[in-house]
Image: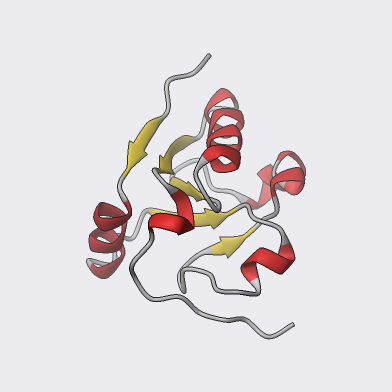
Length: 106
């Protein structure tokens, strides 16, 4: 199994604040979870849609996967890593996120 790096929520927040160009956050939670708040810069791709969304992802970018606690995003990160993507998982998920969140209208 591919080894997945983990990034702390604090480190991710710093990287986003520094506007790292090659960094993209993907939130793999379900619609109703994301409706409660998402990291503003994150792209929402529910876990079950990740395998079918690979064509939307750029292999030159670094992806940080996010979910509620870090378990589902680790599964998504493992899948992406196996497909050749540069990926990390946010440890602790949104339960540990202390940065801004955005509530998106449906």
